[in-house]
Length: 108
Image 1 (tube, one colour):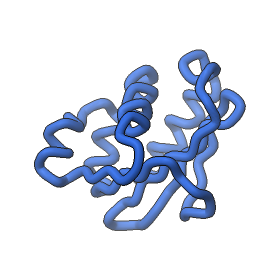
Image 2 (image 1 turned 180 degrees about the vertical axis):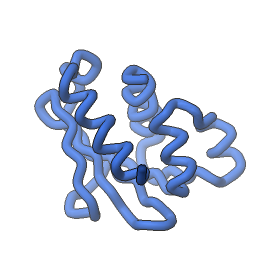
Image 3 (image 1 turned 120 degrees about the vertical axis):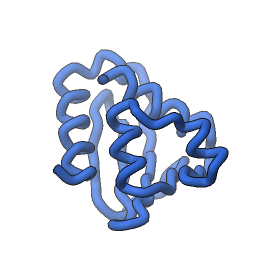
């Protein structure tokens, strides 16, 4: 399974039970995958929408490999170590990067 398919599956899981995002503000997160380019994750009106490419302005961009993004989606990536070692780069609001990780972890 590709990492993008993993992301779509997670989005479907979140949308089936949006309890952990229902009170979140509308936001755009962007993930720049080293191997396949950008993908955006929207929190909008208590739902998650995934779009490939970068059609919208994001508040935070995470740059990492597909392997590390897959680990992040599974809750297996130590983001602090990844950030400190340079395998995860964050442009924009660091707090939103942590918020995205929190949301993902709530659905593991």
